[in-house]
Length: 162
Image 1: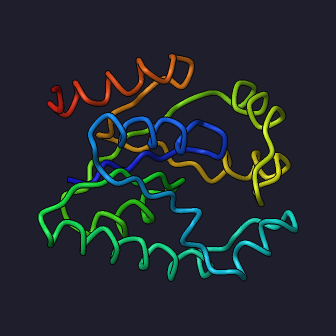
Image 2 (image 1 turned 180 degrees about the vertical axis):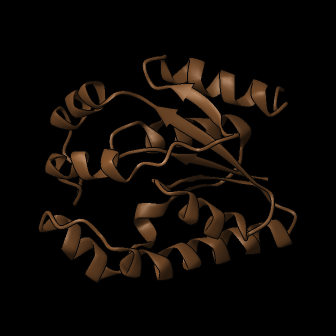
Image 3 (image 1 turned 90 degrees about the vertical axis):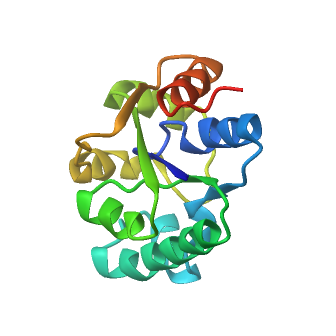
């Protein structure tokens, strides 16, 4: 099983994903680490990515997740996956379960203002919310909850209790 934690920048995908992976003893992957240098440079310059920029990146992620599943493994993947088409592309890997880390724009904006990301400037947050297609059928998790409560809720929802 791949647990895909998705949502806008600043919703806590990396923080919650890493905590979840630790609790499950599964590997954690941050989709940001898979961006080619051209995508990173574009975002660092404050330019949103286009779908043409994203497709090869999403395919690379799906290939990585497919390989993990083929070995009988599991993983947690943090990826914005803002559009249904992106999630469908990732789901081609196999057993991918979607977890939507949901929060409103003022809450997320405050978080972004308080952190320094290696290339995602807070100025791109409105473009993220504009692109966001809320997933149907995903597990919806309130980002206002403490990280431990988010992890516990995700584990319970997927029957991953110890």
